[in-house]
Image (cartoon, rainbow, N blue to C red):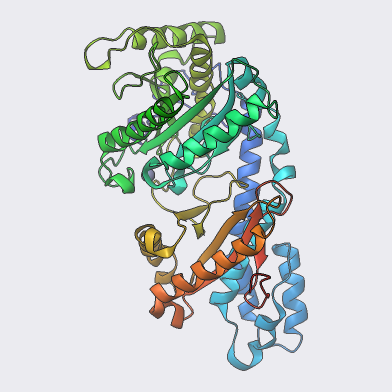
Length: 494
Ligand SMILES: [Zn+2]
């Protein structure tokens, strides 16, 4: 059931920045989808619940590790509380040398994550069908593909279903990069791929539909100097300019290669990670985006709270139209395309539900505004589990080039885990495409190479058992998702 927040007093105003209401008012916006919020909350609780029980379960195990029927009891308890059994070899030796709690803890983190991946379909079914922005809606706006690059920051991992209320589907892809600094060449190749699919009829879109590239930067209103985007030194204007720079480079790359007018449409979005409110930068008639011309959903929420849904929608449309006519630094040339306007209005409206979600379930602002991840994912990110701060992501093809991201991750987990005597769990994950012969074997070889390089980079942690790597691969097209790979498995490539 929903628990609306009653009138906050002056002391609560700061803690709940999204909703400051007058006497007798409540933070209940007419355009918020309460049912969807409830379904997302159940999902969040279910996924977080799988991780939340780990520590207590291990403490219980530890208490009876020297008893005669330990292994059998431990397995019963694990199945009962965690939903899976524990590796026998870790349990069998307990009577001699004591339980290796670090190894068990990491194992449980990986297995719980795997559980979330395997159950993603059923876990997510309830909210997937109710999303404000689905493939049909995107098509009605004139887009056959939406390619989103957020920053790799864990706080943006719930971007699609929570912040944007967008249903994951084949026409939407998410690829995160530190600082939203996506790979222009890689994206131009993705664009070509999708356009080829459209031209050959492999995907819908006909002659008219377009490709939309979205870059998502982030900032923190309550602690702008420390909890903004680490990749840009928490410098907000640098985060905006850099993401916009990449979008313009991508457009130029495609226009210069395929002729003027070929370029995809682009959209720039900012997320205040304290409260999940978005800023949508409005393109002009030429598709140009400007750092100063945007509408903030937090402002929309405040301005339209208490209105009925028709009045709130009209007011929102008015705010967007006014922002488009802005002059000075924010000035653009003419109005955006109608399909783009439909999408922008729907995004801003859908985000009102997320703003209220944070008010209802996280007291208006996340209690942990910084890092709170369960593990490090190194290599290529998975998109199966969509929830804020699930893991810290270090994008890397080789450890040498991803070293800086990996070092930051180890530093974060020194505070989160090592300080408490726990190891750093590192999931080394790569994708392969089962249509390509030998691709899986090559992905496994890559995993092994990266795992070995990570262990070599942090030899002291590795030697003390404070670094636990688990390798995993996923098929881009097929059903194998985050399948664990062990060291002793022979690779076909060797
Ligand atoms: Zn960032």
